Length: 115
Image (cartoon, rainbow, N blue to C red):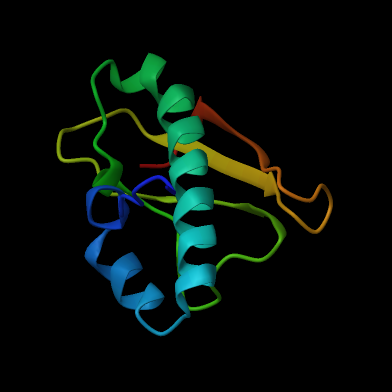
């Protein structure tokens, strides 16, 4: 008996990200959801010292019209509901093309002068 598959997409993706994934096949969708989950977790850990509260998955947006390549560095869109200091945030990852079956990623955050 195989384990039951649980779709976490609606819990972690913004409406715009869900719309983006509506046009991809199931296997690619599952891969992208796993990547987004991992990168958003890294972003939350990076911004926590500055915002000092739980940040919901839907308060950060990663996907855009270009989707997610196998490796990239990006500046996520913060959709934080509460005021926060101006932050410079970036995230990076390397996926299966470099290490089959693995995802390596991280995020950094720092205060910035720009709002």
